Amino acid sequence: MAVTRDETAATGDMPTYQIRAPTTALPQGVVMAASPGSLHSPQQLAEEATRKRELRLMKNREAAKECRRRKKEYVKCLESRVAVLEVQNKKLIEELETLKDICSPKTD
Image 1 (cartoon, one colour):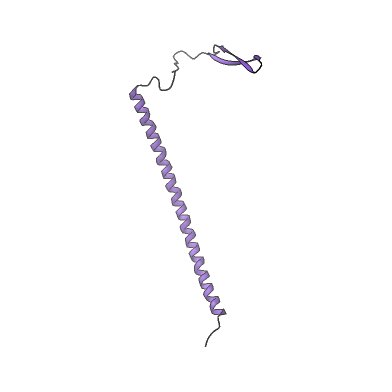
Image 2 (cartoon, rainbow, N blue to C red):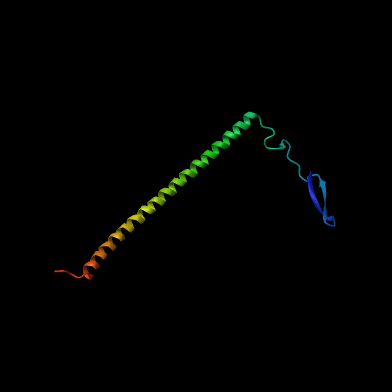
């Protein structure tokens, strides 16, 4: 059965609904359950819970693996940046020493 809204029979603010039989039938042998968990035995429920747990753990493992990969990449980037900045700092210190030698009055 299907519930449909009858637009033509609506009066005022309250729409009218009518119940009618479905136009298509399920093929023979197809059974629809009332709810997903209503026909499961305790063993099936336990197996389903175990399956869901394993799936969750697998997804978590993959997420952790990806997180570790990103962290490694981030650390490599930081190490590279440190190396560049150390070279730049060394050059600036050398330049400062050179300028100090040039600008400072020499005492002979």
